[in-house]
Image (cartoon, rainbow, N blue to C red; front, side, top):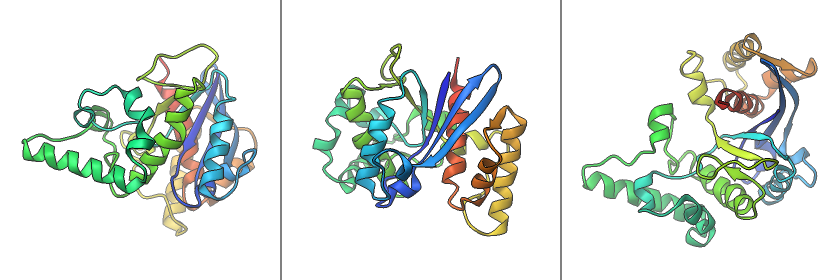
Length: 250
């Protein structure tokens, strides 16, 4: 079975920051076959628009793969006001012409909930202890572009199935939301690991050691070195996303 980890970005240089990890499950071992930035995909580039377009085209060709994606797939149910996920996602670009419109929507929904004495939070965020809600200042662009550029067009075209909002379909890639931070918290490895300083590299090494001790095998010797030297931690996150997808299998 093919498992893919996608560390996503909505930054202007998304092609440099998006990393894709391709792996294959063999019995009780996850074999990492490739790790690459989106700029290296067919048609990819460092800039956001061509990187997202290349990623869409590539995902649609992945057949029955399970793809673990590091970005929020939706907002809290209370903000949807009874709308189905498909209606929300497929009308997303028209409703929110820019990332700032989406962030304003989230802030207004949260403020209305507080005024009513409620806390607007997704159940998955509460259960998985994710660091931020979908409209948070640090990740709202990631949420926005993930839904607008990947989930909405791919699911509307029938090129992917978005779980659990849509049922899976044989021969069609399935996308699930994962969170590296939520994966690291229960195993007590949730500490800063993104940066060029030695202390961050050492933390990446600890995470890498855990991964290799728990069923991850790399296709060549250059891959672990890449994960250590990629100071932004995006390459390592893509592997953690693939690992989280594996953990999510029934």
